[in-house]
Length: 362
Image (cartoon, rainbow, N blue to C red):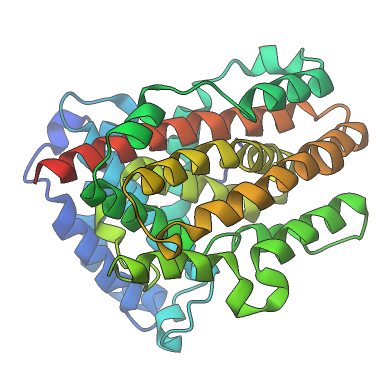
């Protein structure tokens, strides 16, 4: 990926392995976020960020060059820091002072540094040259035909057949992190010239937002599920239990919607998300029905199964395939976006099931 970050040699992780406390470093970063006029204060007192920056560099080294035994905590720290920066791009109807550093140059530097190494690491999972040689329309059609009704895997069977009521509550808690603000990132790519692709994307957004009626907004249905089970309905209420793999998917979408250069990749990813969604929600619905839960505790899944089946067709037929014709030389990026979203979603799904299993043991 293109970046303004200059790749400098990182200090050996062994040299940095002194008193690494990621939680303390994250709290120091939160303090920096809340400082009035952060950039000016750092010019006067650069030492207030020294410990955070030391641990940031250490975490990058560990996460993306795989220092033995520490990778999980480093990934978690980096994705939480990145999310805290990215969330400033959305409005949360909270204290306006929380946005005082929204355009901070320092925060941009921190974000770019993490993204530079992280995205190189993510892209290394794919054979870019092979993607460039694909018949893109055929590749998208084949992928969508498979993913609209994939065979059950081990995670799917566990959720459908074994997950307990406590596990279902834990699943909703993690899913609420995105479910209560879903489609918000989609809104950030809709501005610009009008055409059929743009109008289709607007239709998807409008349905997610209940055509502007709060009672019909998809996040309202999610909040009803949470309330029915006595769970916290406040957005980000379960931040501390969200696996880093889930945060990585969210942060990845922030990046793709922030950079118009990645417009094709984002739409490829959104196509996968909408195509595969119903098959995932059917697993959650089956679990809720097996557990004998009320309609209110599973209504969101039923709504999404109906609407996302339509959205998946729209995203392939009216967005992805027309974009291939509009950008024939760059269309392979749509497939990259599709494949990358699938890879990251599967990774996140594995992490969620691990978290549920651990919660059930407690």
